[in-house]
Image (cartoon, rainbow, N blue to C red; front, side, top):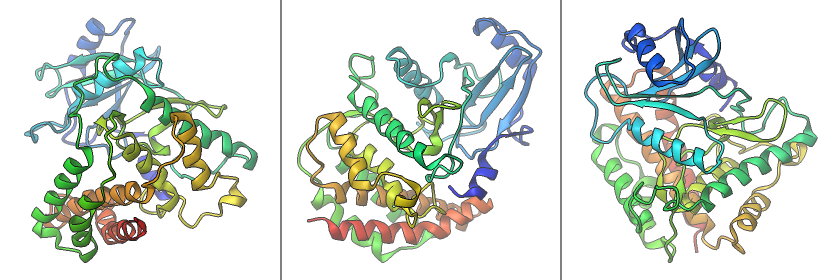
Length: 355
């Protein structure tokens, strides 16, 4: 994300109109359900554009973070904060770096929708994948910390953590490609695109053989991590909204897609001088993940990258449709809508490299 993205997403603001609630009712729930909670309570809203509104709960002793379902009617299965709370709790028991969950509320009468409260983790978030502000000599250790954290996630045993039913097993790519193809084709307001049409037609035939399943994050980017205030160490991975059981190489390729991602779309390194910045090149980064997960290499790498550009393009196509219908009017949404054809083109370029 560029500097503009950092300004737009970092920090807190007053709670926005339409997302306010009875703060006294929340304080009452916290005093009953969160060990050591002591008011008075002040509520702020994080600026970041998560689809689940996220709040900072400030008290004289400490701060907390609350994520809630948006108020009003919702699509079935969307905004499942209870899934987020479940995966965070399970991962915390495995000593994986996530915020501690203090409690989940499934009573709509408290603030108008379900929510959960977790610890506020202090540290640094890098909104730009070049990790500005670090000394050149420091950067390799930060990239290695991201790589190690993702490999640790994919080595966890979902069954042992009680997450064996956290997603559907098998045929991950078939199901994902079918889902995003259908969404793209049905959203007539956003129009058609020749690169996407070609991807819809050709991707299914290029799916590599072999099944793997792991806990996957779904949106593993540098700006969804909190790093230790002074050390090259990930202290919390955030935003588990897209997590499920899935193919670990899909998850890793989405993360490593930063090497080919224009930085004005999401946090990316395309066009950056990696040697001058002292950032490991893509091939070395992939090899480090392979070493940590017991692989010799990833033979169908270009397919995994093409799939992820296609998936992101389909998401941006959906945003374009909402802009066209007038249901997503923010400047951020319009900017993403204009990025859709570039993502589709990048997906096609990766697909054309597939053998």
